[in-house]
Image 1 (cartoon, rainbow, N blue to C red):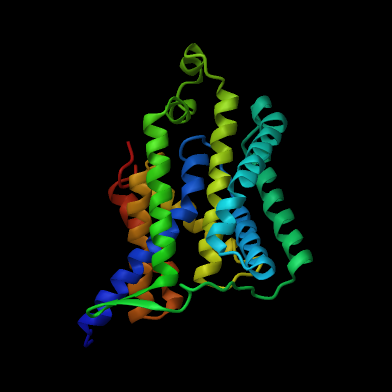
Image 2: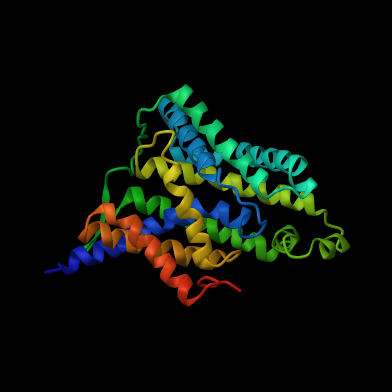
Length: 291
């Protein structure tokens, strides 16, 4: 096969930018699943909710989709805290968070999807912004701004959260809450309150991820299902609880999917990305940077 060098470079760069988007999509799951041991399979539904917030604000008010979701982040944070409180009262407090707890998130996923269908229908929706369409050319490399802008904002969000977790008392408590709640209580921290804050943060990240999603591609209410397996795969591949590992895993899958789609067709991309996951876990079961 005669592979053009510039095509290869552009495929790799596009994969890295796509990986930045995958990191934003997976960040909330890295918190809820990786740090709190809560299998929130409804997370893509909250991302779709963010997409439709961006769509509504952009269409009705003419607000930039990323700015709209930044403004909406506090509301998503409160929504996440409420969702965790219901989950805690109904399941976790009774030590019944396995199958029944999982059904709770299945229910949230279904209710959110049906609600979006009733309000917006099943047609694909998109947004308008100055950076959707143009590209930045650097030699033979072409950077689509609709991927570059989400990539940059995503990396800022990941670094900010990593600093929050490593340098603040609440952040260190979030990292400790799934490991030793007794020790956490000795430090005058309420594990339920810490989990509520962490889950709120995980859902708040879904707002920005939703803006990125509708910038990159048109959305319809059921598209979130395509990301359920992918976000958990990225978290497991990176190593549970490791943000740097999650970013590396997201970039790896992004490059694998981009190269596969470029040279073999987009239908092969999901199979190859999950093949990378299985191969990595066969060699390193704890993930790339897992403990």
